[in-house]
Amino acid sequence: MIYGFFKPLYSSSFMGPYVNRNNFAGYLEMALPLCVALLGVLSLEQRYLHRGEASSRMHLSLLVLASLVVIIAALWVSGSRGGTISAALIMIIQVPLVISLVYKRLFGPKSLALILVVVAALAFAANMTDWSKISPRFEKVFKSDLSQNIRLVLAKDVWQMTTKFPFTGSGLGTFSKAYPPFKTIPRQGLFVHAHNDYLEFLAEMGWPGFLMLMGFFAWVLWRGGGFIARALKSKRGRDPNMIYRALLITGTMGGVSSILIHGLADFNLRIPANALTFFVLCGLTIALSSYKPSRRD
Image 1 (cartoon, rainbow, N blue to C red):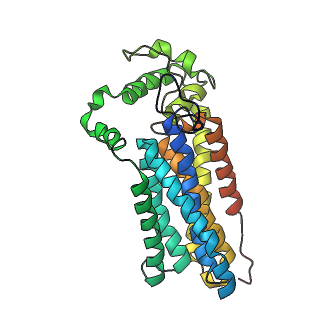
Image 2: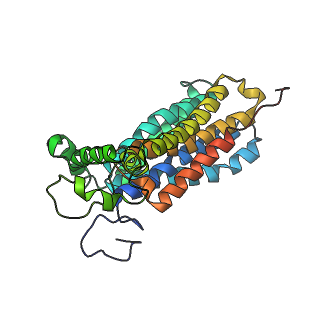
């Protein structure tokens, strides 16, 4: 259902305002790390606020936790394999980072409490999910013949397309028109996107434009990752502002990284809502990592 009201005539995979389940999952996987980061920020505040102020923030913590549960459940319900795997990989990395930033030690009584909160959120979301409709999509990956996988065949075609226009590309937004001469998939219909952000950008922009774009992505990840590394090494008690920023960066950079991973199998950066959110997260990562502690700290 589109917006929960309009039933499509030819498909049942529409999700909210999205036509494609994978793009819907792409938006959710950018929001998920932000919720985890906010939980870390709220946990850190418990150390600096008075008991009365800290208890008043409990309502906000519950709201963020509820949002986390809903996002995880919606991600699973979407049935997007790429979105689920990307989000899972980011959470595996982000949760230990958040715990280390907040509690100094990865394993301890207080850090265990945060781990249990995340596990409880996952369990609650799993309970809300109808797995009978989702499990077959993941089982299909192991049962299908990879040589006949449409995405892999499409990737081979697009690679041949890149060799035709190595320096200039075919032009941004021209994939659907430039691809047909290279198509080897025995299937009718128009392929509007390559289902691989990297190959599509390479085919449309050529190697010079592609390398500049990859350089921008690498710069964002380097700035964010470097700031988190410095925050982990710093004396936390003396500069809580740096820890706050590092926690938020785990959320913004987590969303960026998830889309970059998912981009190996989908085209989230060609969807305006997802692309806008992605580059906003890139900007926030750079802005947050621009902080420099004062010398007295």
